[in-house]
Image 1 (cartoon, rainbow, N blue to C red):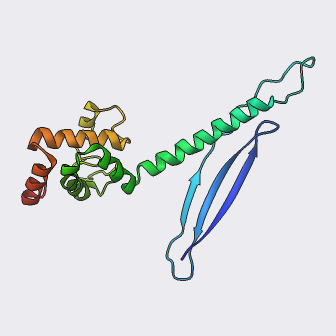
Image 2 (tube, one colour):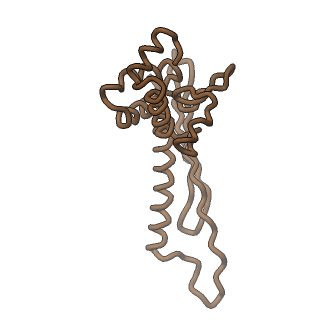
Length: 182
């Protein structure tokens, strides 16, 4: 069992706002062999220019403060969603939405063997890249410019490849079982 501890490091921003970096550390118990460190960075808000001496003091109106806080909160949500979206389980769930149900088991078997559902999987000897181990990986640009990091783009390309070359993921899996490649 692991204990979780959070360390918050804050840096001063505007008078009423601050940006924080949160470091969550999983501390291992006696028999655990490694600790997990997760770091989330939140950028500091940009400084506002100095106001003239005749103007109001340098305080943001309450509505602007709330909007700035909401914006920082959205940035943190987007960052953590992006991180979760590339985990193998999240990518597999995304594939369930994109691949026809009758073809999903075969599609999943191929992707599991080829990349283990790792969006950034790279074959050191051939250079094949991504979930479907496209060679070269840049082939996936035909579906989207974000092919290096977007699991949806890679899933769409892999499904198109299996349909174009074999007729379906089921037929691609039958070929894979015989040849151990597709």
